[in-house]
Amino acid sequence: MSKMYIVPIIIVSVIFGLCLTGCESTADLREARALKKSASNNRENYQEAIQYYQKFLTQYPESSRRNKVLEEVADTYYLWAEDEKQLNHWESGVQLLQKASTDYPETKVASKIEDVLPEYLLEWSQQLTYQGEFRHALDVLNHLIMHYPASGYAQEGRELRKKHGIIAFNSGTDIYVMNANGTKIRKVAESAIDPTISPDGEKIAYIKIQNPNDRQGYLYLSNIDGRKAKQLLDKPIASEPNFSPDGSSILITKGDAFQKVDLSGRTIDVYFDIKDFDTIGSFNPTGEKVVAFLQNPRGKTSRLCVTENFDEYIELTTTENDPIRDAAWSLDDLRIVYVTSKGLHTISPDGQDEQDFLLSDTIGGMDIRAVDISPTGNNMIFIGKKSTEDNYHLYYVTLDKEVLPFEYQPTKEGKKPLPSPRRVSWSYGYLRY
Image 1 (cartoon, rainbow, N blue to C red):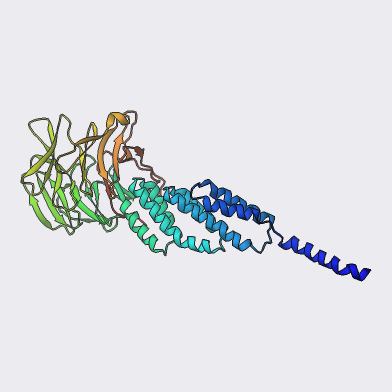
Image 2: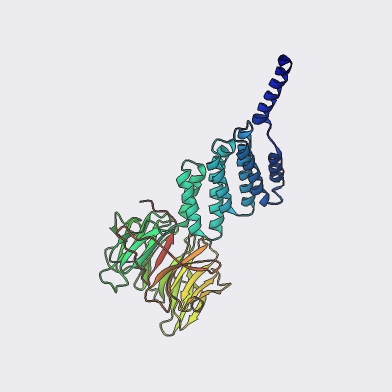
C-alpha cells in the first residue's frame, strides 16, 4: 500500500511546488499591456498601466518574467514622455524620461534614453527661446551642458546659450557685465559710462570719464572681463560708442561730429558738422545704416531718423515736447525700439507700423531711460523706475508685453549693484570665468 501511494504523493508535491514558483497569474500583465496599447488615445492609461506592471512585480518578485516586465515599464515611461513632447509638455516629458532612466537603469530603454534625452533637452530649450522664456531656456541648456557635455547636442546648446547673451550696465560710474540669467556678474571698469559689447561677446567698449557728471571722455576697449583695457583715443571727447555689426570698428559721438575708429584707435572716417544729431542709437544688422535722434534746436520736436552717410537722413517719426531717450535696432531688422517719457515704442525701419509697445502708465508710471533688444530678438531689457520707487532697476519684457524684474546674483563681494539711468547693452556671448 505504501508503495502505491508514494508516487502520487510525490507528483502532487512537485506540482504544488511548481505552482508556488511558476504558476503566476498574468491577469495584471494583460491589463497593463492593454492599457499601454490604448494610452495614445488616453494618456491617463500610461499611469494605470505602470501600476498594473508594478502590482505584478510586487506579487511575483522572483518571477522569470521580471526583466521583461521591467523593460516594459521603462518603455511605457518612454512612450508617455514622447506623447508629452508632442503636446509641448516638455518638463513633464523630461521628468518621465529621467525617472525611467533612474529607476530602471539596467534596461535597454534606459540606454536609449541616455541617447535621446540630450536632443530632447535641446529641443525644449529651443522652444523656450522661441517663446521668449530665455531664463527658463538657459536653465535647460545648462542642465544639458552639465549632464551631457560630450554630446553633439551639448555643443549646439553652447551656441544657443551664447545667443541669449551678455548684459552690461552702469551702476553709478562703475560698469558691470553678467550673463542673461544673472550669473557671473563682475565689475569691469570704474569711472566709466556708456558700455557697448562687441557682437562676438569678447570685448567691451566704454567711455572713461574724469568727473561723475561728465557725458564724454576717453574711448576705452577691454576684454569682456575687464582685462587688457586700453585707451583708443588720446583726447576726452568721445561719447556713446557703438560697435559695428562685424565688430571691426566703433562709432562714437564727438561734439558736433561722428567718428569711426578701428579697434586699434585708428580713425576710419569722420562725419563733421552733424549739429542736429544728439545721439546714435545703434547700427542696423548689416552695418549700412544707423538710427539716430535728431533734435530741433529752435523748437521742442525730437525726430527719430535713419542715416547711411550722415549727410542725408530719413525721418521715421517725430515727438513733440518729449525728447527721444534711446533707441535699439533689432538683429532681425524688423523693428526699431525707442524710448520717450511715455514708454517704449516700436517702428519698422521704413517708418511704417508705429506702435506704442509699452506705455509707462500701464506699468506703475515707469520712468524708462534706456533699452536694448536681446540677440534672439524675443526680449527687451530696460532701465526704469516706478513712481513709487526710489531707485532704478533692470526689467525685461517679452514680446507679449509681460514685464518682469531682472534678477541677478550678487558679486563675489556680496554686492548687488543697482543700475543707473544710463545705457544698457545686451549682446551675444556667455561668461565662463
